[in-house]
Every structure is written in C-alpha cells, then in structure tokens.
Length: 313
Image 1 (tube, rainbow, N blue to C red):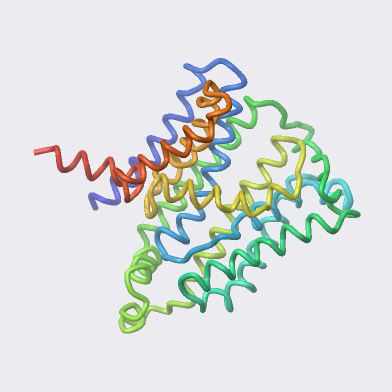
Image 2 (tube, rainbow, N blue to C red):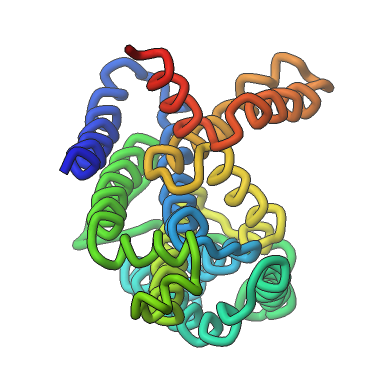
C-alpha cells in the first residue's frame, strides 16, 4: 500500500508541475521546451514499461514514434481524413505492427533482441525515406494543424497543455498497470523468465503486452511532435532518435515512472543550457552524463532516492 500511495503521489506531483509551471514561466520559448519535454517523456515512459519493468531491450522504438508522426501528415494530406482520426489510426497501426512483429522478435534475448529491434527501426525509417510519393522522401513533408470541431491547435501554449495533460494521463495509466497483477508479472519476468514460467506466468503474452503498450505510447508522442512542429522528416524515426529514447530511460532510471520524465527533461533541457559553451557543448554534455552514470548507476531518480534513504535516520 505504501508503494501504491507513493506512485500516485508521483502522478499528483507531475500534475502539479504541469499546472503551476505557466505561472512562473511566461516566455513561449520556455513553454515550447516544456512541451517537448512532455512529448519525449510520454515516449520514454512507454519504453520504460518495456525495458525497466519487462526487461526487454528495444533499439528501434523510434520506428513507432515515426509511424505516429507520419500518420498525422499522410492522413490529412493524401487521404483527406481529420488529424485526430489520423492520430488514432497511427496509434492503431503501431499497436498492430508491434503485435505482429513482437511475437517472433520477443523470443530472442540479450543482444539478439537488441539487434532485431534495431533492424525493425531501420526498416521503418528506410520506408519513410524511400516512399517519397507518400512521405516526401528525405526532405519530409508538412503536417496540417490539428483541428477539432472548428478549433485549431497552434502555438506553444496550446501544445503545452495538450502534451502536459496527456502525460499526466499516460503516467496514471502506467502507474495503474505497474500496480496491477500485470505489473507484478512483468517485474517477475524482468527478474527471471525461468522462475516466472515455473510460477505459471505466460511470459510470451506479458512481454508482448508490454511491447504493444510501449509502441502505443511512442506513436501518440510522435503524432504530437509532428503536429506541434508542423513538419516531419525520416529523422523522426531514425536510429539516433531510438538511442536518445534509450538514453533518457537509462539516465532517468529504469523501472521508475518519475525517472522517465526526469531523464527526458534533463536531456532535453541540458543541451539548451550548454549552448553557452559553444563548440564545447557536446563535450560538456558527455562529461555530465558520464559523471551522473558513475555516481548514480541506477539512474538519476532511483540513485538519488537511495542516497536520501541512506542519509535519513
């Protein structure tokens, strides 16, 4: 019960930050950065369900992110459907693809699984690059604004609230999942698949469930980013984006809902702060990440929590 209360406290903390931040930050630039943090946090949150709780590595998660992004571009432009329906369609396609691809891929373990998911992500990115008639090719394509009942979503402030509220809902869903029998089964699989099978847990089904859910989170985040920026390119689904998501999850703390958001926030905001170093920006970013990983090996949030517990009588 204590862990459940703590988890719901995390959701309340996230909601409080989302509501309170505009009262302290009035610049649209900072609200834009905050909206990007919320969008990336949503994608990393789904990835953390797969990696942190189910213990399955994915290096191609940007593929699902790209499917959501291109869905809101292709749907209105080529098919004439509203953006919100295209977003739901992209989420459905990502979930269906994860279900189909996940069944054979998730039978692999370790670096074999990592290479398989990497290959999946590369294939999706190649499709977006080569199908120029639909996707605009390497240059990408513009994304029409989100419209709903005559209302158009535009501007940093609007997308701050859309992405922030969606993140709160996504965190609440993740908390409920983690606290449910499904979450306990995922943690058991993370610790030992053999022991889980002995206990009667359907390992393949639960791993596939985590994979599909993580793909859905990524597709929603990808659609939001495309609608927010008004442009989508194959880089949205590229390998570097997948590595960025994995880095955010590990940096914040695998198996931590709050860690997903903290990791995404640090690695989104920190490059903006380090621009004062000009040519040495990437060197400074790399050194900071190395120091954090040396002293907080479990990730930022779990590491600081453990440090606080050791220092508290």
